[in-house]
Amino acid sequence: MTNFLVLGGTGRTGSLVAKNLRDRGLAARTAARHDADVVFDWDDPDTQRSALTGVDGVYLVAPVPRVRYAAQVSAFLDLAEAAGVRHVTYLSTYRAEQAPATTDFRAVERDLAARTAFTHTILQPGWVMQNFADQHVPIIDGVITVPGGTGAEAFVDAADIAAVAVETLVHPEDHAAARYTLTGPEALTFAQVAAIISEVTGSPVRYQDIDRAAWIGAVVATGFVPADYGVVLDWQTSTVESGNGSRPTDDVYKVTGRQPTDLAAFARRAFRAPQISDLGDFVALEPFFRIVEQGLAGLVDEGHYFDQLADDAVFEYVISVPGYPRQVVGREAVAGLYRGYGANFVLHSADELAVHHDREKSVVVLEYAVHGRVVATGNAYTNRFVSVVTIKDRKVTHWRDYLDPVAVFDALGWPV
Ligand SMILES: NC(=O)c1ccc[n+]([C@@H]2O[C@H](COP(=O)([O-])OP(=O)(O)OC[C@H]3O[C@@H](n4cnc5c(N)ncnc54)[C@H](OP(=O)(O)O)[C@@H]3O)[C@@H](O)[C@H]2O)c1
View 1 (spheres, rainbow, N blue to C red):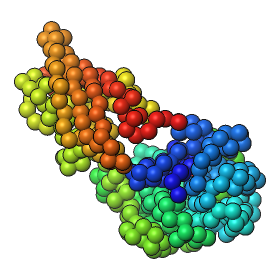
View 2: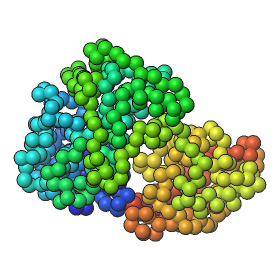
View 3: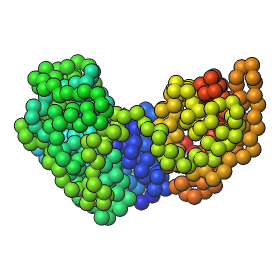
View 4: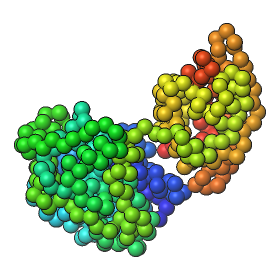
């Protein structure tokens, strides 16, 4: 299998599934209504037909947050059959077989099981840890508010779900008709979750239980989910509170060969500011750091590139590539952005430096070229940059970047 369509491709698991597939050098298209490689709308079959062209593996995320979608998914699976898809991995939910009859988790599982034109794998994860880091179960003013009492849940990292999904997509023959129950390594109460996040962040976090109906009413009132989705919220929270929350399984380990992430490790990643101290994360960019060091020599304090940035430095990417932010503020955020560079490119040299210095305005214009290779393919990569750098008190306060997007497309593939 070489061509993958990742539904929910901008979501919590889908985005990671697509990235992991690409990191393996495979072609993966993200599909969603907004900001994805291909427009895919569950309510518009035309978008589905075109998204399926040339696809052999599909990561299936049903429309969320909805309760009734089985007919739409079934029609999509018909299109997938017609398009020659050979495997579908479906993101279901923990104990879907016990889901309320007014929801469609079970119906989609049954539909897949009845089809023979392609193989399938079903993933049944528990609550994802990411719920605490986004608007699902947000931590507001240091308080986690959700009905759960003293019930426990084996929260799972979306990255582990994605890792399992990728294995099933890449080796479908080993996972045909399999159903995996995906959890973290331990079942935790919400109070324990709060204590772990407190310890990792150094800021007090506590758990506040709440009446279930009041909580569901409040979630619906925010507009985050429609009123009929209350049945899912009720099922998920009452399952945990009644002591029937997910229990740890070893399915993540069985499929990926690595232990699932624990909540403390997730919290360090999700809630702590990125630590620039580990410069090992940035080795792929070394030639870039060296040529900038050369270009700014004498104008900024000595030290590593990141030490030369003001805490609130503003980075603008004026000519860039889709998916890259237009602006990033603060040296930690810049480091966060550059930390991912090595997944795509590794540089081996940089040259052709030209420095234009406007002393009155404290602006330096650097022109330079970088050379390296594409991680996924090993192909050569060269790009040219113009960086307009403003300096104040011997620190970089503003960085405006222009690159050749064609060079990036030639290296990584042209946007579809
Ligand atoms: N949250 C949990 O703890 C948990 C646990 C177990 C299982 N699950 C299941 O995991 C699945 C994903 O849920 P999630 O909350 O994690 O969401 P998510 O995958 O983070 O986000 C939803 C994705 O689907 C896309 N999408 C939504 N509506 C769409 C539509 N009408 N047409 C096309 N694409 C659409 C979104 O992009 P656009 O909006 O741009 O289209 C986005 O990419 C759900 O089936 C959920 O039941 C969740």
